[in-house]
Length: 196
Image (cartoon, rainbow, N blue to C red):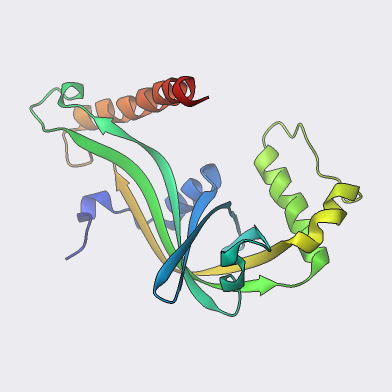
C-alpha cells in the first residue's frame, strides 16, 4: 500500500526540484552502526545531482563519501488546517510539502572544485538581489578550504509528498492554499517574537 494516498503523492520531478531550489536546507541522514547521524545543510541541485559542503569536524563527514547510501529530506511550507477554512464539513488536518530522496554520496577531493562550488552556492543563495559576491581571491575563503569537505549525491529515489487538500472540492482546496500562505507568514513572525 502506498502512503500517503496517491492524491497526496507528486511524482513530477520538476515540482520536487522546485521545492529543493526554493527550500534548499536539507536534512541529511546517514546510518552508522544502526544509529542515524543527521545534519542540516543547504544542498544545491545541479545536473541531476545535489552538491553540498560539510565541516570536517562534523562526525557525519566521514559518511558522506565512498558511495554510501543516504536519505535526504526537504521541507516546503506546512500548516494546520482548521475545519473553519472549508465551506464544507471537514475534520482538522495538516497540509505540507515534503520531498524524500535517497542517493549515493561521493566525496569531491579537489580544493579548486570546492572553492568554485562555494562561490556558486553563494551566488545561488544570494539570488535574486546578489547583494554579496564571494570573490575567488577572498583570503578568508582560502583559509577555510582545509576545514570543509565537498560531496555530491546522485539521486536514486524520488518521493514527493504534497498534502494540500487535493481530495476536497476545488473551492475548499483553494481556501486551504490561501490558509497555507497566510499561516506561514503569520506564524513565522509570532514564533520569532517568542524566541528571538
